[in-house]
Structure formats: C-alpha cells, structure tokens
Length: 103
Image (cartoon, rainbow, N blue to C red):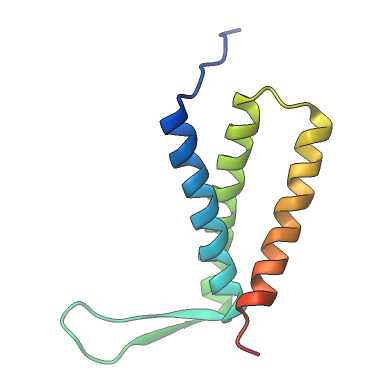
C-alpha cells in the first residue's frame, strides 16, 4: 500500500475553500428551490426549477463532502472524528439552508 501524501498548507487552504463554497452553493440552490441563469448576450433569464436544480446541489454537496474527507484523511483523523464531522456537515448544510431561505 502506498503511503499517503502530505497536503501542503496552501493545498489545505484551497480544499477548505472548495468545501466552503460547495456547501454555500448547494445550500443557496436548496434554499431558493432552484436557480436562475442568464444568456451571455442578454435576454431573459431562465429559472431552473427544483428537480433539475437539486442535481446540481447534490453535486456541490458531494464535492464539498469529498473535500472535507480529504482534509480529515490528511490529518489522520479517527473514525469517530469522521462521524462527528459528517454530522456537523449535515447540520451546517441544514442551518445554511434555513438561514438563506427567503421565507
């Protein structure tokens, strides 16, 4: 088995940024039940409703979760710490959705 590579502080910073941005992006999509896009050359924007938008939100959450796991693995965290981080990740996502919801 190959030894695990050590992540430099710069790599850890950028992976943490990806984790945070994925969590915020996914939560924004879920909180607003979709997202709007606009064409490059102007014109009316198109709203992507919840069923299709949730595929993008799932991708963002997945990207964020994998990044979090990579950071935990680089620190040689225990299985209990992985479990606690997963629970906090879900709680953070839920809290962000509640905080960003327009209702």
